[in-house]
Amino acid sequence: GNMVAGTKQLPQVPETLLKKRKQNAATKVKRAESALARKKAHKTKRREIFKRAEKYVKEYRIKERDQIRLTREARKHGNFYVPAEPKVAFVMRIRGINGVHPKPRKVMQLLRLRQINNGIFLKLNKATINMLRIAEPYITWGYPNMKSIRELVYKRGHGKVDRRRIALTDNSIVEQKLGKRN
Image (cartoon, rainbow, N blue to C red; front, side, top):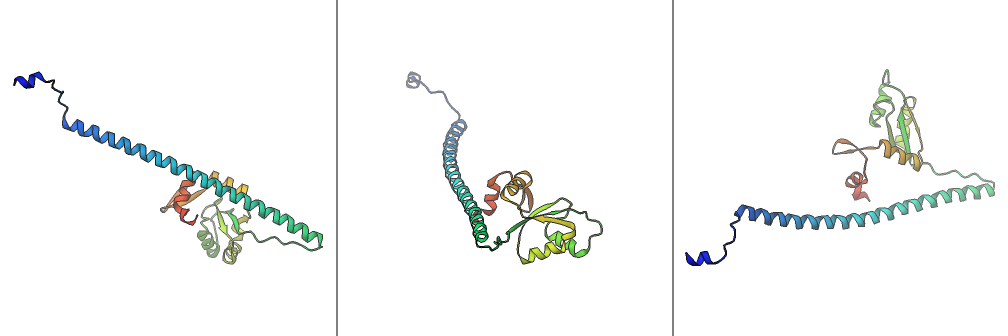
């Protein structure tokens, strides 16, 4: 027993504590790595989003200039320029639910306009335009511009995610559902 007393004895640390320290160190490293990876991914994504937004702005500018140019050319040659039909409409319900005929009621159900003042964006084609004609007395609709679309979506936009109605507060919600469609 003389030898043990001579060498300095390290304080005994319980094994569970040692294990816990080791685990904590490992999780700390993992967390730091994942945070770094997230930061990097976020940076590249921001760059991509910015590029895409610029591309859209450019597209809209070109479209507007083309419209103006074609209108002017037509006027110069004494013709009329008929602009292309808009592709999207904003539809809003303006009348209540009392005494609605079954056909318009069904149409408004399909358009998700179950309450007064509900509004939706609608892709315009022959079928949807006929639906709008059927429900005409109970709804109002028109062609929104970029500004009104932006304001509506930011202020009141909701989407359906996993059968739940979720406010569109953030691009990531849209991206998760529609990211595959770019």
